[in-house]
Length: 164
Image (cartoon, rainbow, N blue to C red):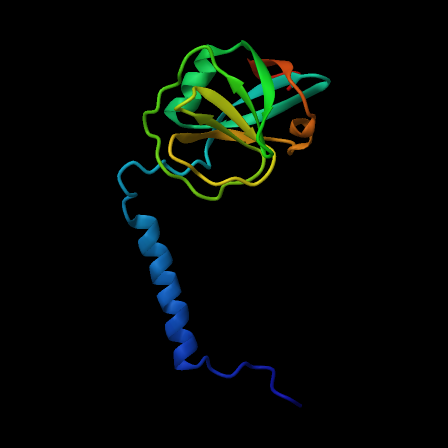
Protein backbone atom coordinates (compact mmCIF):
# COMPACT_ATOMS: atom_id res chain seq x y z
CA UNK A 1 0.00 0.00 0.00
CA UNK A 2 1.29 3.44 -0.92
CA UNK A 3 1.78 6.06 1.80
CA UNK A 4 -0.46 9.16 1.48
CA UNK A 5 1.47 11.35 3.89
CA UNK A 6 3.10 14.48 2.53
CA UNK A 7 6.82 14.98 2.56
CA UNK A 8 7.98 17.59 5.08
CA UNK A 9 7.90 21.19 3.83
CA UNK A 10 11.19 22.50 2.59
CA UNK A 11 12.97 25.04 4.83
CA UNK A 12 12.55 27.68 2.11
CA UNK A 13 8.77 27.10 1.83
CA UNK A 14 8.43 27.26 5.63
CA UNK A 15 10.45 30.49 5.75
CA UNK A 16 8.40 32.14 2.97
CA UNK A 17 5.08 31.17 4.56
CA UNK A 18 6.24 32.47 7.94
CA UNK A 19 7.47 35.75 6.44
CA UNK A 20 4.20 36.34 4.58
CA UNK A 21 2.17 35.71 7.74
CA UNK A 22 4.36 38.05 9.79
CA UNK A 23 4.19 40.83 7.17
CA UNK A 24 0.40 40.51 6.94
CA UNK A 25 0.06 40.78 10.71
CA UNK A 26 2.52 43.69 10.93
CA UNK A 27 0.79 45.66 8.17
CA UNK A 28 -2.56 45.22 9.91
CA UNK A 29 -1.12 46.59 13.16
CA UNK A 30 0.82 49.52 11.69
CA UNK A 31 -0.75 52.97 11.91
CA UNK A 32 -2.09 54.38 8.65
CA UNK A 33 -0.15 57.21 7.06
CA UNK A 34 -1.33 60.68 8.06
CA UNK A 35 -4.34 61.67 5.99
CA UNK A 36 -5.20 58.14 4.86
CA UNK A 37 -8.87 57.22 4.92
CA UNK A 38 -9.87 54.55 7.40
CA UNK A 39 -10.80 51.17 5.94
CA UNK A 40 -14.32 51.42 4.60
CA UNK A 41 -15.74 47.96 5.10
CA UNK A 42 -18.28 48.87 7.77
CA UNK A 43 -21.52 50.07 6.28
CA UNK A 44 -23.57 52.50 8.27
CA UNK A 45 -26.75 53.08 6.33
CA UNK A 46 -28.47 52.57 3.00
CA UNK A 47 -29.77 55.26 0.69
CA UNK A 48 -32.28 54.95 -2.14
CA UNK A 49 -31.38 56.55 -5.47
CA UNK A 50 -34.08 57.18 -8.07
CA UNK A 51 -33.68 58.59 -11.58
CA UNK A 52 -35.26 57.95 -14.96
CA UNK A 53 -36.81 54.48 -14.63
CA UNK A 54 -34.21 53.27 -12.12
CA UNK A 55 -34.53 52.75 -8.38
CA UNK A 56 -31.50 51.29 -6.60
CA UNK A 57 -29.78 51.38 -3.24
CA UNK A 58 -26.28 52.29 -2.15
CA UNK A 59 -24.69 51.23 1.12
CA UNK A 60 -22.83 54.06 2.81
CA UNK A 61 -19.60 53.45 4.68
CA UNK A 62 -19.14 54.77 8.19
CA UNK A 63 -17.15 57.98 7.76
CA UNK A 64 -17.81 61.68 8.52
CA UNK A 65 -18.54 62.60 4.88
CA UNK A 66 -21.12 59.82 4.46
CA UNK A 67 -22.76 60.79 7.76
CA UNK A 68 -22.90 64.40 6.54
CA UNK A 69 -24.58 63.30 3.29
CA UNK A 70 -27.10 61.23 5.24
CA UNK A 71 -27.95 64.27 7.38
CA UNK A 72 -28.97 66.19 4.22
CA UNK A 73 -31.50 63.62 2.97
CA UNK A 74 -33.89 63.67 1.25
CA UNK A 75 -32.32 65.52 -1.68
CA UNK A 76 -33.58 66.37 -5.14
CA UNK A 77 -30.59 66.76 -7.47
CA UNK A 78 -29.69 66.37 -11.14
CA UNK A 79 -27.56 63.43 -12.28
CA UNK A 80 -25.56 63.73 -15.50
CA UNK A 81 -22.85 61.96 -17.45
CA UNK A 82 -19.30 63.04 -16.79
CA UNK A 83 -16.39 61.65 -18.78
CA UNK A 84 -16.70 58.01 -19.79
CA UNK A 85 -16.74 56.34 -16.40
CA UNK A 86 -19.08 58.21 -14.05
CA UNK A 87 -22.28 60.11 -13.47
CA UNK A 88 -22.17 63.15 -11.18
CA UNK A 89 -24.67 65.09 -9.10
CA UNK A 90 -23.91 68.49 -7.56
CA UNK A 91 -24.84 68.87 -3.90
CA UNK A 92 -26.45 72.04 -2.47
CA UNK A 93 -23.51 72.43 -0.08
CA UNK A 94 -20.11 70.87 0.48
CA UNK A 95 -19.69 67.86 2.75
CA UNK A 96 -17.17 67.64 5.57
CA UNK A 97 -13.75 66.37 4.52
CA UNK A 98 -12.85 65.21 8.04
CA UNK A 99 -11.09 61.85 8.00
CA UNK A 100 -10.49 61.90 4.25
CA UNK A 101 -7.34 60.81 2.48
CA UNK A 102 -6.06 58.36 -0.11
CA UNK A 103 -7.78 54.98 -0.50
CA UNK A 104 -7.23 51.93 -2.66
CA UNK A 105 -9.22 49.12 -4.28
CA UNK A 106 -11.22 51.50 -6.46
CA UNK A 107 -13.98 49.70 -8.35
CA UNK A 108 -17.00 50.32 -10.55
CA UNK A 109 -20.16 50.93 -8.44
CA UNK A 110 -18.23 53.09 -5.93
CA UNK A 111 -20.08 56.17 -4.71
CA UNK A 112 -17.67 58.99 -3.93
CA UNK A 113 -17.65 62.68 -3.10
CA UNK A 114 -15.33 64.98 -5.04
CA UNK A 115 -14.58 67.73 -2.53
CA UNK A 116 -13.08 70.37 -4.86
CA UNK A 117 -16.32 70.60 -6.87
CA UNK A 118 -18.78 69.52 -4.16
CA UNK A 119 -20.36 66.74 -6.22
CA UNK A 120 -21.23 63.09 -5.87
CA UNK A 121 -19.56 60.69 -8.30
CA UNK A 122 -21.27 57.41 -9.18
CA UNK A 123 -18.58 55.34 -10.94
CA UNK A 124 -19.76 52.83 -13.54
CA UNK A 125 -16.30 51.94 -14.90
CA UNK A 126 -12.76 51.77 -13.57
CA UNK A 127 -11.18 54.84 -12.01
CA UNK A 128 -8.22 55.79 -9.84
CA UNK A 129 -8.10 57.72 -6.62
CA UNK A 130 -7.29 61.40 -7.06
CA UNK A 131 -6.78 64.05 -4.37
CA UNK A 132 -10.10 65.34 -3.06
CA UNK A 133 -12.00 62.11 -3.74
CA UNK A 134 -13.71 60.58 -0.69
CA UNK A 135 -15.38 57.18 -0.81
CA UNK A 136 -18.93 57.35 0.56
CA UNK A 137 -20.16 53.87 -0.28
CA UNK A 138 -21.12 51.48 -3.02
CA UNK A 139 -24.11 50.94 -5.30
CA UNK A 140 -25.55 47.62 -4.14
CA UNK A 141 -26.86 46.00 -7.32
CA UNK A 142 -24.10 46.92 -9.74
CA UNK A 143 -23.59 49.61 -12.35
CA UNK A 144 -26.39 48.92 -14.84
CA UNK A 145 -28.59 51.90 -13.84
CA UNK A 146 -25.58 54.21 -14.19
CA UNK A 147 -25.09 53.21 -17.82
CA UNK A 148 -28.25 55.11 -18.85
CA UNK A 149 -26.90 58.09 -20.78
CA UNK A 150 -28.31 61.56 -20.25
CA UNK A 151 -29.31 64.10 -17.61
CA UNK A 152 -32.15 63.31 -15.20
CA UNK A 153 -33.72 64.47 -11.94
CA UNK A 154 -32.24 62.39 -9.10
CA UNK A 155 -33.90 61.73 -5.76
CA UNK A 156 -31.76 60.54 -2.82
CA UNK A 157 -33.49 59.40 0.35
CA UNK A 158 -32.69 57.33 3.40
CA UNK A 159 -33.85 53.73 3.09
CA UNK A 160 -36.44 52.61 5.58
CA UNK A 161 -36.97 49.14 6.97
CA UNK A 162 -39.61 48.38 4.33
CA UNK A 163 -39.43 48.87 0.58
CA UNK A 164 -35.66 49.15 0.26
